[in-house]
Image (cartoon, rainbow, N blue to C red; front, top):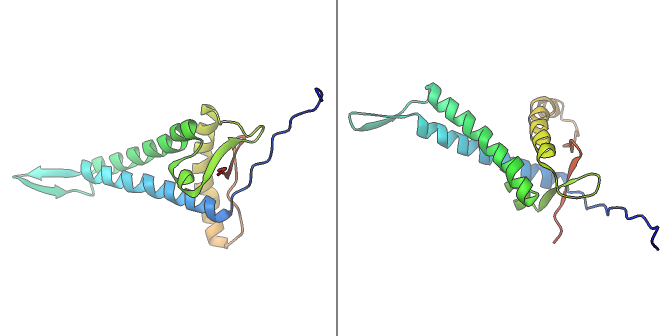
Amino acid sequence: MANQQHTPTRDPAPTQARRITAATIDALTALVCGLAAGAAASVKVVDGVAELRPQSAAMWGAALGTALGLSFVNHVLLTLATRASLGKLIAGLRVVRVSNSGRPGLFHLIGRWLFGFYWTALFVPIHLATDSDVEQQDAVGLRIVRRKS
């Protein structure tokens, strides 16, 4: 009895629909907040009249900075605290370590966040152009599983 090895139980894998829902919610949250911050930064008041200047560098800098910052907070810091980003919380998913289904660490989450940009830039366009059945991949020793009820 003392020599029995404890193997971690395999958490249930999420459906592709849940993963896509979570990713879409996360992406839209970052984009909408980034655009709102950019719009707020590009407002200029001249003679008591507020005008929006969408061509200004301030708008695009604020939009990009806010979107990336919010993405980092959502995918790294919120996931470090709760094991899930906002989209994953809504979709009923969580992030765990592959090795033992434990909590993900900070550096693994940063690597996973950066891998997400690589995946989005390289594989999403290929998938859309070829209408292939490429599934979203887990990375850096972390995986997405369904949250236990």
